[in-house]
Length: 363
Image (cartoon, rainbow, N blue to C red; front, side):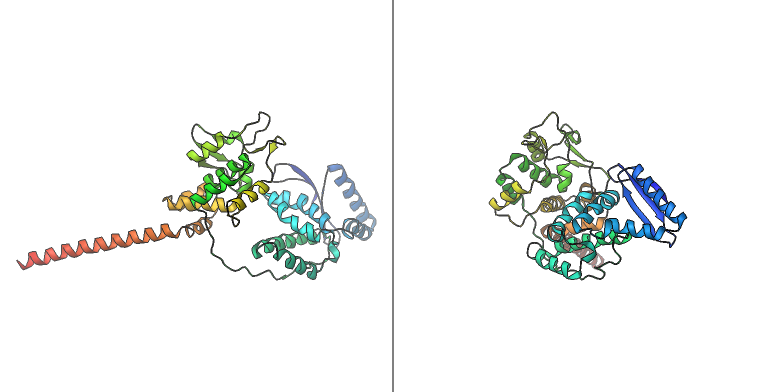
């Protein structure tokens, strides 16, 4: 309790004020500097000593709660929760975009379940049920944050019904389709970016965060530092990957591999050239994660064991990697048929040996 210095996932420090009111409830808020936190703590302690703490508690509560909109809450949630608790806060930032767009002007205290059901109906016209559910999940977590910080008195989405997610067959890119997609992307930097994702299995953000310091062309090795798990990993580079890395323009004052030459900084959102390329290639169903799935499938088909694939992809759980084995049914069938042939050959060999023994004994 008191003023604490918290370290967030990016390594920065944040000032947290945590103090119990006499009724047992807790006041907790993050401040931009220690001076502001100290002033607020002094007011709280003085009000407790004077017996006027209930009035101050209501004042502090109203000060940021009464007219707080979803947009303003999203700012607080991202700064005070996502950046502190999440290893990859940018994923939450992306998930908050549709929430801001459709519910941003709604006052948090007056948000109703009907508003969220309307959000679900509208969003369902644009994206798959799983994507809608992820947005609702983020919204529920944001409201839990608001409740914990006494910005709202009750959670409006308790037992909110999610959309049913129908299982579907997942299509996997072929080598020919992957190469066609790369050739169809007009921007050469993004074409190479897609090629590297397809050859290494990097996640979208891992690729965008890639620096030249992580690329070893001599040893043909890529080191991935900005990972989802926080643990670095190493991926060998193919000839195709090295060819594309060698085609990229390097800027002296920019350490990143994939640079927007118009701005001189790293690419942040490659979707526009990617979307145009996949439409030209007739692959409208493809997303960035399909390139990761494609690489995992190719590794499995080429006989790479699942434990190695797990390490190359950076999965914390082998069960996650096991899903990719199902995306290569031809490989599985070939393995089964190979086992069946081996069993049959062994049986025939044993039977032949038994036959020779019987004939020998009869003689």
